[in-house]
Length: 154
Image (cartoon, rainbow, N blue to C red; front, side, top):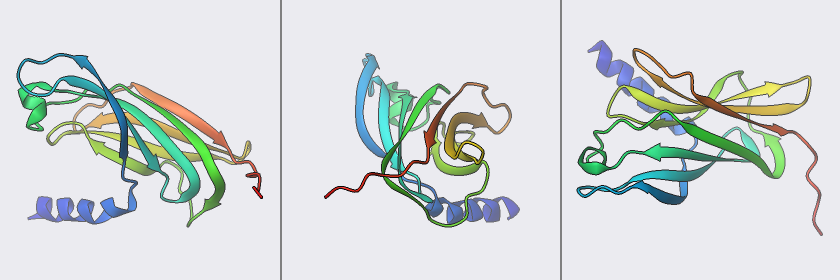
């Protein structure tokens, strides 16, 4: 019963995370059965920082297991976040706050993006990494956005 409550609690928290929009994909390995292995490019907006969009590229495993959602995707990912409008903070920012999460295996592995704010340099820092219930991966990528005034257009 405790496990069910924890899962339900996690599902309630998910709406606060950003949802990704697929921008494009490229095939990397042909699979005779099921979809090909791919690299996906996705975009998501930071839910607490208006004016910031992050672009994420990540591996997606194909084949029969991948097509059924049973394959484990690789831990490698790349991230680039950009200022796309005036930056406005919506709510209090927490250090290391998760802004995006994607399941990369049936149960045990996720890819996450967390945000930090470097107050000294007035810069938002985003880190993407993958973790597992038992053992995570040290592979990661980071991007930074200085908080600058956005030019007004007439």
